Amino acid sequence: MEQVPDSPYMTTAELAALLRTTPGAVRIMRHRGIGPRGFRRGRNVLYLRTTVAAWLKAKEAGDRLGQRAAA
Image (cartoon, rainbow, N blue to C red; front, side, top):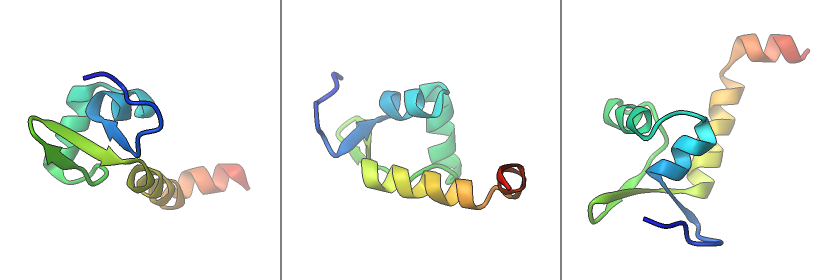
């Protein structure tokens, strides 16, 4: 699946690249319910970019050690 410029959606591979992990790890996160919310489109899973950004922001806010280091 090729990347669509200016698309509001991300593929599993694009999300994996953003998180610096593998697509398999993203699939496991989705299966366990600990990743950002996505939806199936045919055989692919798509993630809304705004949902991913909100999920990352929540993960950052919940990281107490990271907050201490920034202070």
